[in-house]
Structure formats: structure tokens, C-alpha cells
Length: 128
Image 1 (cartoon, one colour):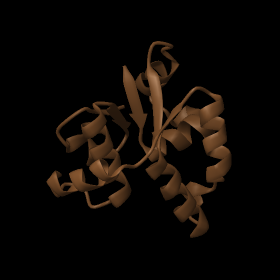
Image 2 (cartoon, one colour; image 1 turned 90 degrees about the horizontal axis):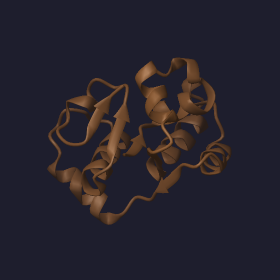
Image 3 (tube, one colour; image 1 turned 60 degrees about the vertical axis):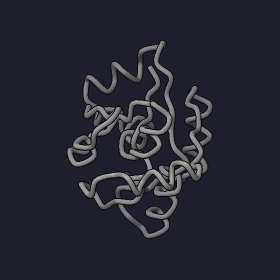
């Protein structure tokens, strides 16, 4: 199964694995699953780290290298993803989450999230 992790799950998997649910850990540890991260998540981390947010105290460049070294694949943001946001219902206003949702829909990849609002969207989204 192809799995796209939202930004918080990426941060937790990389630095605070105890915050992951048992279901999330099982999915991430299953060798048959393909794990993806979005360029949008790194963009979000870099912006919020630069703003001094306490929950984003990680270097995006180092995180990217660590994810790639640990078998994750990078999902770039394309124009098809960007325009797909227009078709999303107005459940959640966060632009980073909305691009992740659009990427999951367009690419047919299951988006893993711990966010209840994100999980309300139709499509391949799984709350863990």
C-alpha cells in the first residue's frame, strides 16, 4: 500500500515515535508499504521553523535527507495537485493540509493523518 504521511506524522516518525499510535507504527513498519512524504510538508516545516514554532524545531533539510535515507519517496507538488484544491470542500482551511489531500486524491495514495478535520475529507485518507 502507498502511504503519504502528513506533516505531524512525519515529525513524530522522525523524532518522537512514541507519539505515533500503534496503528500508525504498524503501517510504517510493514515492509510491503511504500512510504511517501510531500514537498509540501518540508515547505511547511521550513516556514514554521523559521517562525520559531516550538512544534517545528527540526531542520527541514536534515529531515528530508533522513527520510530519503530511510526509504521514503518524495512526492513533488505539481500543477495538477494545485488546481485540484479548487474541488475540495471547505472542511479545513490549512493550505498545507489541503495540498496533501489533493495529492492523495490525484495520486491514489492513502494519506495518513492524526488530524480529525483532515480525516473528514472523502478519498484515500486514514486517521491513525
